[in-house]
Length: 269
Image (cartoon, rainbow, N blue to C red; front, side, top):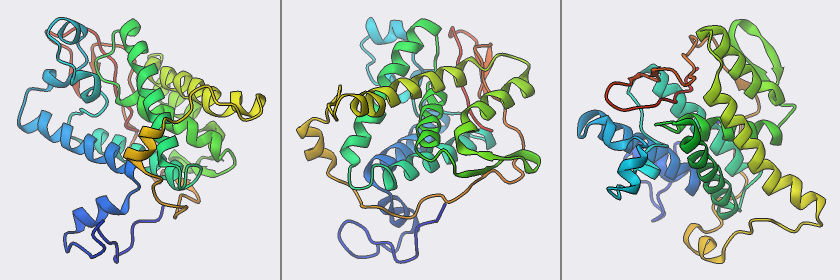
């Protein structure tokens, strides 16, 4: 994936002189929000507040009205290599979708992300998941792989395959590394396919009529975003060490479930 160039400008039109600010404002709006929210929430959870404050604990949501948990559970993580790889996958797939298929249609991409989050929350209720970074990421991986099915992918140890197989390879790698059924990754794939059906398959079969049209107010808030930009021409994994995938066991993504119940986490790879 092409990195942002050195002459990136802030919304004001001039370089800020701060590489972090220039990088953030080089991203299209939805990818920027996802990336910045993940970094900010994780830093807050690791240095300012206890991590359980950010997890999806339904009694705290429904009884104590801690509504923020419905969002922070998508972005919280335990700092480390696995978290960094999660952030990279989220950034990469979101950026490719927003600069590729949804170029100039960031509001439409926002609807896709909202649908993924809503389906993930429903799934979390029935599967007792505390953290939803994996479903969000795997859904985006699935959507990207459907949009670029023949893009070459390089995986561990020189394996080469087409992008359409990437979600299943990630799930299979988890199974190989952990010996446990990669429940959370598979749920992310199912969610991704559900959103793909709603946003792509159904309209294609019904004359373009959309089940979930993009609200005009969202277009006003998000705007059109950037036009087509540099995207990934090959999805290389290099020689990254294997990441622990997650099922629904007691330890997930660096979290060991003590007093909190449930589990569900982590794509790192």
